[in-house]
Image (cartoon, rainbow, N blue to C red; front, side, top):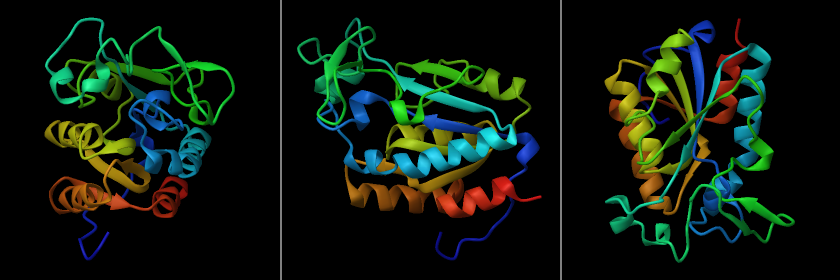
Length: 212
């Protein structure tokens, strides 16, 4: 991204992919907190997931969970309240781009986890906050993390910052990540590229994943 230096390249045998919050209640059409740019990122996210599967790179899916009791995050995200139940476990709703009802916290079907993938539930923005994400990455011998998903500048950014603080080399995929606000998104990518990790396109990260 831009003219920032390339201080490191991906170590495929020491990598893991983190898919942030690509779940129905954020991504599907008509979702409670609909993020159209994240829905548009599904094809690129799938390309990266497929490339990682092919190369045996571990995949960790993050899922944001709200409820069942009120927490401080509700103050800033009022659609988490019981009247809407955005991102509540064991709650279904209909979306206009798929048939029937779907669990609101499930990863979208296009990117669904497979046996052997990891799923980490979190009750805040960042993937490392009071979860076992770090333990999973350590167990996988991962020192490099590829990050994509929903959404900048909150859940994605906090996960990137958490990875950086724990000495992981970050690779954020700009066009497999979205936001609710394009200006926020641009500023988020710039911030990460300046101080936290490399910001790459889908084509560029796949090139590094497949490089020998």
